[in-house]
Amino acid sequence: MFILKRKDVEISSIQHPKREQQIPILTYQAQTFRLISVYGAKQGEEAKAFWRDLTDHRGKVCVLLEEPDRYSVWGKVRLEQLGTEAGLDTRVIPYTQACLLLLQTVYIDVEDLLGGRQAGLFQKEIAGIFKQWHFPQAETPEAVKQLLTVDPLTSLQVPPWEEHHLITLLQELYRLGKEYFGNANFAEGVRDILQDMPAAEQTQFMEWLNQSPLGKLWR
Image 1 (cartoon, one colour):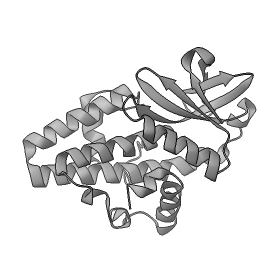
Image 2 (cartoon, helix red, strand yellow):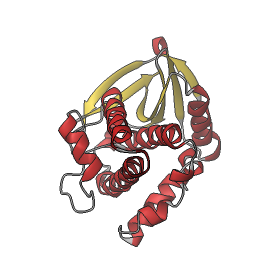
Image 3 (cartoon, one colour):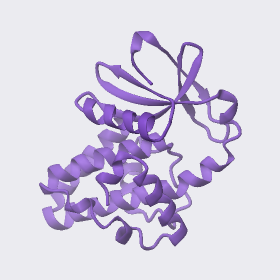
């Protein structure tokens, strides 16, 4: 739809109807958009590819915001819709669990194959990503350690992340994995990693994954 600059838009936030957190909202020409995905300053081509996929192939009304330090993709939403998204919370929880399983698998592989020192560095980099992109309940070293080690399928404290957090996590995790292992083999066999999840939730997650360019990275 549009590629916009920061001066073209107004960005604010509103209270999530079901959680104690704020939802970023972009306003452009009396239209409102909700954050879908965030990219770093050097990921302009990836951001544009994701934006084009949403607009050209999936019929979404989206804007791409270009800023000096990042790119972000926003999808059109009516503010009154946010209070009626009853299915959103229940759907995102298993997506979050699946993403945490992928994160933990990569972390374990780093520790097993590259050693404790590299695992420590990996943990610091993940903590930096959580901080940079404002992931809820991932602000302290203790919280990061828990996210890397506690089974998300048995934990009652799945973090209240939104879909844009999950997309950012998988993007950054793929980038880190390639840096540490030198190839993308770690991103193959996603279903095997998720085998302890209920089959229906596995299928829902894979469908969600494959609806975005992430499906070309994680297979």
